Length: 386
Ligand SMILES: Cc1cc2nc3c(=O)[nH]c(=O)nc-3n(C[C@H](O)[C@H](O)[C@H](O)COP(=O)(O)O)c2cc1C
Image 1 (cartoon, protein in one colour):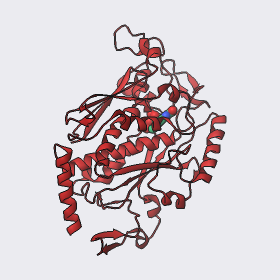
Image 2: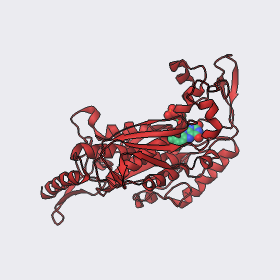
Image 3: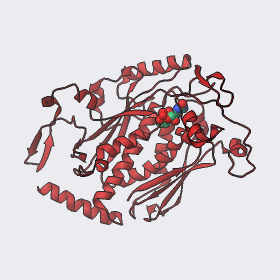
Image 4: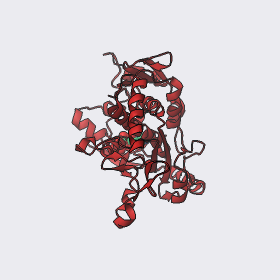
């Protein structure tokens, strides 16, 4: 089945991902992945490093003449500033380890807990891997997952619906669920709110502060019946929430308007079921369940929202303690991003794509795309004929 691992440090030579479980015959080109790598680097509120990075993937195994071979797919994304870091980050015993040493843990990062856990006295050994740089490798994997999903008419979109305390209006959000607003600086569906969001970013930047926000991910074209209620860990809502929570700085997830649903009477929340005899299909007039019932896709749009905390690295000083001297100090950085919420949206798309690709492989199997399609069409014929 569809599995993956990533490897690589933030200032190491490259990021690597290995993907297994793809069927043969799926179209896959570097450009399918590069588009999302570029989107991950964009968005109003990002700083200098994004310009250095300009990520591009190299597909080094598992694909021939633009089609998957069924063998493990290897993806690499080079770190463009490796040249400046190779003496410090080299895997060779001669690496200079007394340069770039970090002994001052930054609040809100893995530095202190990771240093204690792994017995690292140089916290660089923690932050290099805990950094959200790793999400570039995941986005590359997401590109593979999206190619598989698109062969079945499944698409994934994301947008920013809140930044700091500025919220897009619900009407604009629900009017354009199938749009990622890539031409907008914050990828927000509400132009008026977006303007205020940009002002909030400018204000936070001027104060040396940072902002978080809410992202929304939507998947369209899903068949009914992905996931299951039979074991707790196989519920698709649980798997999607875990995948979203694995994104650095994401601290809350809801399926559909779950937190609002919790405030309403059941009669307003649950999506009544109707049958369209002309189309021979069940349908609902609203989608407050967000596309999942009992841990299974129900054929409606999948709608997930996630909360990102404000970035932890600030220009404004936060108090911490040096792990060697135990002396207090004030942690601050001269150059840092103010907000990465639009980028987190792209990573969120990736995580949703990966979970859905896994669920599609589980349900429809097959060694080739052709065989997988045969299983899919047979199932869809059954659903249609019910
Ligand atoms: C796309 C993306 C970019 C990020 N960029 C930064 C950043 O520039 N500065 C920062 O302090 N945190 C950034 N983060 C968040 C940190 O990586 C994260 O907060 C930190 O590793 C601690 O993990 P935790 O917040 O999940 O506990 C980013 C997260 C994502 C998803």
